[in-house]
Each structure stands twice: as structure tokens, then as C-alpha cells.
Image (cartoon, rainbow, N blue to C red):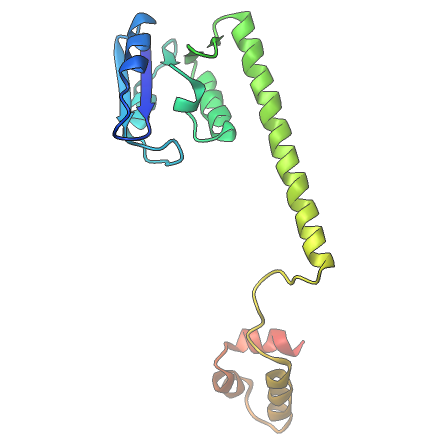
Length: 181
């Protein structure tokens, strides 16, 4: 069976163009989300659509950007569909996983998504390295200052119980011990 999915981002947009194209493509049932940004994960009609799909069914969208929030999200969703035996078509981009050309296009999109992930990872590593070079500290700020740690050492050396020193400094005993190492 052919199912369609349509989405418009704002209330003043109309899904009429998408709905007409999906009906022409042979969709008997069309799920639509209106006034919902693609960036949100709360797309109730899409969730209902995905739960309805069975092996052998075809999901048809007007454009790829109507389906996924990002390229990574789209790849994940379509890989899940393929694993479930559901076929996919995008009318505007002419991607049809039932044809050799459509499958090749899908593989190219997958390659581009992998490249995008690699570039993001590389830029992140370079940014962290540059920040460290500039002296930026990562992680949580220490709960105890050097002065407090010195005071704690002095108190413990004088016979004060570590638990009472930790309470005095308003930290846990484990935090105190880590600071004293």
C-alpha cells in the first residue's frame, strides 16, 4: 500500500500542493502535520504514519526536507524503513528505492551524510584543541579553592574528622578526598 506524508511549518502555509502530488502518486492514505517545524521531534502524524507502515508498503513524500529534521535524522529514518522492508519515494528529488537509480541516489546521500559527520567531528576536535591552546578549561569548576584545600589539610592534620571538615566546607567526603589527592 502507498502512504503519503505531508508537513507544513507554519499555520499560514497550506499543504494543498503536497497533498495533490501525493494523491497523483497513488497514495490512498496521507498523514499530515500542519504548523509544525521540521526541527521538532513532536510530529504526531509522522509517528502514526511510521507505526502504520508494514513490509511491502511504500512511504511517499513530496520533498525530503518534509520528512527529516536533519540529514542524519533522515538517513536514520530511511535506514529503519529499509530494515522493515518499507520502500520510499521522494517526488521532487526523484528518489525511489524500488529503482536502481533511486537506490544509487540514496547511497550517495548516505555517503554525503557520512562526510558531513566526519567534517563536524574534525571541526569539533580542532575547536577543542584551539580552545585548550588559548587556556580554556573544560569540565566542571572545582568545588574547593586551593585555600580551602590547604585549610582542610591543616584541620585533618590537627585530628579533625574528614566528615566534619567536608561538612564545614559544604562538600561531600568523596569530593574532599579527591581534592586532597
